[in-house]
Length: 519
Image (tube, rainbow, N blue to C red):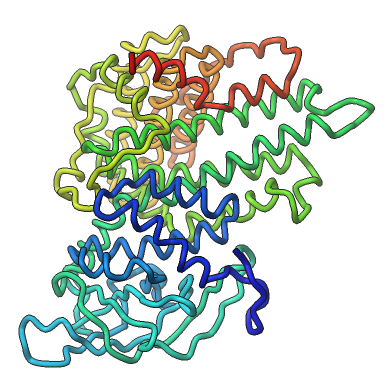
């Protein structure tokens, strides 16, 4: 899937990618089975982030055509490679400040043919793509939400490529380039931002899927290495401190896996956006942290080129930079604070457990790219504390005290007029994400009946407490600090490697549950 190129060295084999990517498109149109498409990509491109991200960039750009309501064009171009033409060097991802312009080629009010002129920057696949989905302005002086439109631009309208060398994912080809030629309007003029938002709903899951895959490659590789390496004539995995560190990493990795698949299981409801925003900000940053810690525990083995341990730790940082816009996503979550804390609807534990047991690790068709945005912006929250109480965890987790502390913190932030400050909106959004991670860990324990996952619950609670106390400290607030919980003792194990891998194999913990549900 890679080749030696005279101009660029070893790069992705884009001709091969163009031939194979149709399988991903077929999973999305007409049925739009989001997870199946991701699974097909993993089967085709293995554990190579360069390929996964190159394919993902093409798929996202092609999905923009669908989001614009141009299904016939999308179907006709399934044998093509696409790229996203959004960013410009002077503005980064501030799309409303884009300088690329689009001039209609005739006076017909329904004109779809335009001349596109501008320069795009840091664009993946751009030198080899057949088509570009370009963000541009018909009125160059406009800057509001209706200032942007989306255009399908053929490669023939592009020129003056300049490759931008990167520290990571070196076999991709990222360039800046000029656009000066014809393009076709996608959807309605001035609806570009709405189209991008519609495309971004399901795309949040794609980026998170790559992050989870990086974790699922690196952590088992770390466990295997520590089970074979010798220090003081012993395998390090048998050292109590190493076992403890890997145990904590395994539980965190399992939680991230569960949070991804949990979001997918509930993606047909009103939580598509809420969970997706969390995946594309909170989860991607946690993946960065986890892979870095895994590299530190494993040691020098991770430096080797053939090792996924170090490679994935480094390349995971690409995900929030390229696709996450994690600050924006977290700011979007903060606006839900009052409704999240104040919801009174009683969630049905049995109903949610049945949804999880049916949906975990399974693909299903849906239509999230055409979901009503107003509905998705208002998820149907439920009583947080009551739900955790109904789960019946055998640990001293006071969910009502947690909600009360968050409500008091929110009141103080508002009283001090800090809620309008982006720093505090970001922090409060992060706290909601940690609360939701705690809720997910509680559900993971309930759905699997695995008592070792109670420590995963405690770890998420303590991480929330750490973030909560940090907000109080950094802003000199009067809210009292929250105390952490103690982890349950680590059990005695005869085979640390198998113990850790068993905990990490989330699917195994659901196999008997799914069998029971199907009966």
